Amino acid sequence: MAWTIGAVRGVFWSSVLLYAVVLVVLWFVLPADGVVLHAGPGGPDRWGSRAEFVTVMAAVGAGLTVLVDVIATRVIDRVELSSPLVNLPHKAWWSATPARSARAQRMMVADCYGLGAGTMAFISLMAILTQFAAPWLALTTAGAGILAVLGWSIHLMTRRYRPDNAE
Image (cartoon, rainbow, N blue to C red; front, side, top):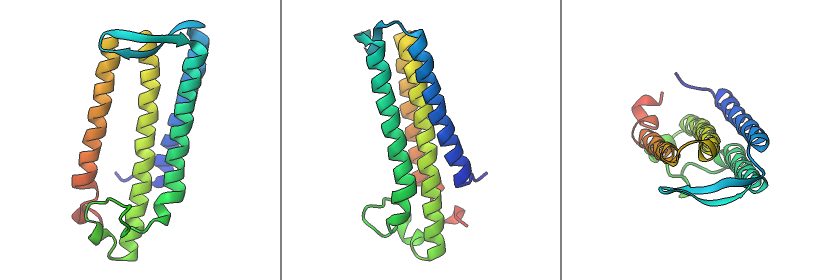
């Protein structure tokens, strides 16, 4: 099933809303002091205040939201596929006709929003796990997130933009 840009954009903005809700809930349930700011394999190794945690996490979420939306709405459609700035499998095939170029750009916008939605969901989960779960669970989840991005990247490079699946 091919997702439309509107549907993937909706999923992205829903994930942004989820992230905001997570931060609001964490504001009310975390103690004022003694909040985990960083954890490593040995457990928490940096502590701070609830205000510092929520402020930093809000800045990360806002920055990611702006970055994804600007790339999806203002960058992808303004950069020619033939540009050296674009790294696309089978670029010559995709840029051979205006119809193919337009389709590739729509696919890249959808992929940008999809990756942004996945990242927002991931950092929502990590914000919760670093505060309430065992360090091994947070690290395992971080590793799973890295593997998911790697798997998605391999899919994009080997299947998603393959010319025989394009039309």
